[in-house]
Image (cartoon, rainbow, N blue to C red; front, side, top):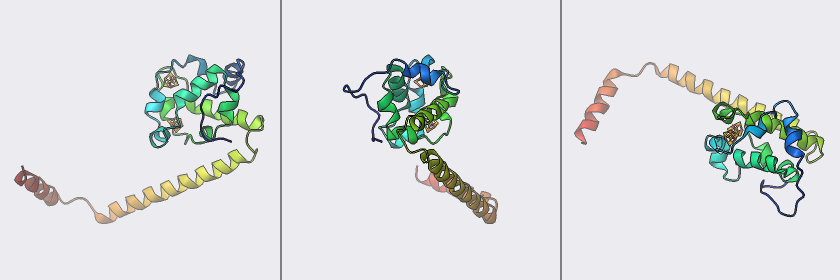
Length: 163
Ligand code: SF4
Ligand code: SF4
């Protein structure tokens, strides 16, 4: 796999690619994308990795850049948080589209068949760690008891002194 999903002029274009994606469960609405970029603007992965851009990935699929998309590491970075899914004005359901791209990458031999299962095991572990951290935070808050209204009044008075 390679690191960045970017159009490479040397590669062949596959006009069938978008139809193949659209024919699969989850990929049906890809052709409705009008490139507004709302998906990218709200994506937590795009926020930390500028190379990850859902709008661009969709565009590449629509242009038929099959090999560029399916060999890219970027299609494995989605955390399946569904933010883009919820916000898309065209109901493209990019989270599901990404599932289709991953399926195709495995079927066409761009990644080892065991890769999605290993990725899922890592996702499950990360989810357990997040849950553990949230529970521990909730326990700490419960142990600390309700906030003291006197503390709040003192903070407000101190803030007033500084203005
Ligand atoms: S939010 Fe929807 S319509 Fe806009 S670029 Fe993303 S997938 Fe396309
Ligand atoms: S589901 Fe994936 S692509 Fe969509 S916002 Fe979340 S991380 Fe980004």
